[in-house]
Length: 441
Image (cartoon, one colour):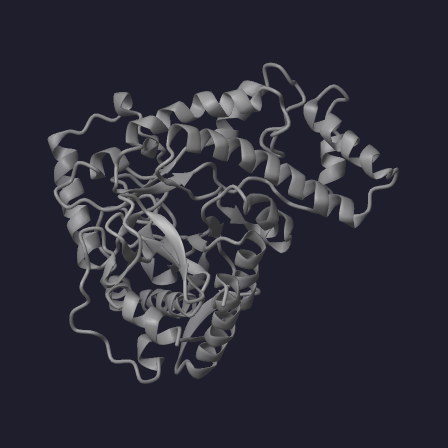
């Protein structure tokens, strides 16, 4: 039986397992303009599951009871129809991460390994050690996108980490000098003859960490505008001498289409995504052949099209998704994304914010809930559903620290933990491997 046949069998097993888990608790959630009571599955709702008292983990947080090929670096594997990450020592690994682990509430990009601008002081190191201890205590095993990675990498209790590189965002600033029609990030520009050379030059910075086994992988960008509807016309709207316009015009001419139809948008988007991923992936793998290319964090309307997944699949090692506006993950949909790309899925942003934080919570895409207890319920409901999914290899909560007026954090703006939320997280995080085994049967 092939891996993908087993994968299909695992899909139906996951759906069946989901039906067996019946939520006994509800959470107070503001959705569609009103407060609602939404079913929220908790650990106690998993039938016949007894939490393990001692889950044997290696230094990376991998599960020592299941092994695969030892490569010295993180890689992916599909085993018995289920996708897994595999850590450098060859143990099965589920990435349980936190984004933006930082002393500041502001977003930071010092995870790009620019040592010249990131001097680690004694004060920073004290913070790093305290923070890493707290994360390990609550069974997190990955530092997600952004954050003070330089400082945290020097802590006494290392943790696997990710790097984020802003390929297209950085290129767009440069592009404006030659192509005045560049539209402030409204579209990507992978057809530019200069883009491939830019990627190669930009990726040279990856060589600094190419031999570090603690590095999980690289995000190339975040939430690029890969929306399908109207994409051909948007590219045609660029000036006639702009590579974006030329690519769209040539695409239509090759199809002998004068009027744009829906399939034109769908197939042109696939070409756009493929061209971006091909060039970025080649640069990443040239300068760091050892680590995973984690994609560009698809989000929002991008998820409505099959084209991003088909276009990215041949070049990314993992498809990363910032997954908002779903209280319970849509397992069949997630599996379809993985099937289109033939790669595993990593959920890289999601969160809930609570009224009882005392913050205004007017910003951000996360759910608004009444209390920290509802955030705790959301975490368990969301992760238990993902653990039933044969395509998902982990999740990264957004984020570590609250903003000035928003409550996504596991700690507040002053660094005090939300203990009710953390207790709920630890209850699941400590059992991810036994749960994935139990829910996959």
